Length: 204
Image (tube, rainbow, N blue to C red; front, top):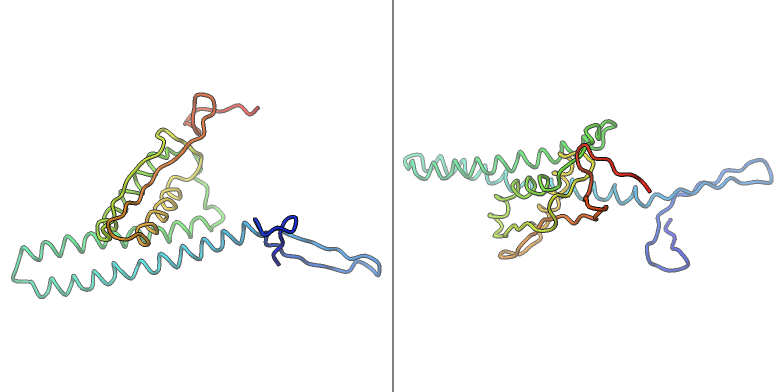
């Protein structure tokens, strides 16, 4: 069921409830807030659906390019062009496969064993670089902004896949000629931002 706070419709919460009779006079009522779990499950479903849809494009492109190479066998220049495009589409297939593998690793019990300081600059740079071909094909310009020198604790590969998924979705749903930006905003702690390697913050 869904409930709201104070009768308002803002920020509704999804809860599960279970009642059990305890003797003849009492009833045990257990209520769990499963809102965040539901949001995570929806994000996973969207992730799988979007990635599966994106897989159709490079798979179809590779098939068409293979036929084009066969028909242009007597034209070395065209063969080289088609071969380069096949290589690019194969790279996209590798990226999409990597996303699915990262999601599987995240859902596993030991999915977050590589937690440590991560430079967000490197995460954003890797995520943008991995989608240059997709952006070029869609006629979308990739831009980078935000703060530099931000660090967090996490798994670098999972963060790259997460940011990359956001960029990929933005490219898919943006019209040709538009711009997709990626960046970070850090909250300052004294003179430092984020968590740097070998640096510990005191908790006040």
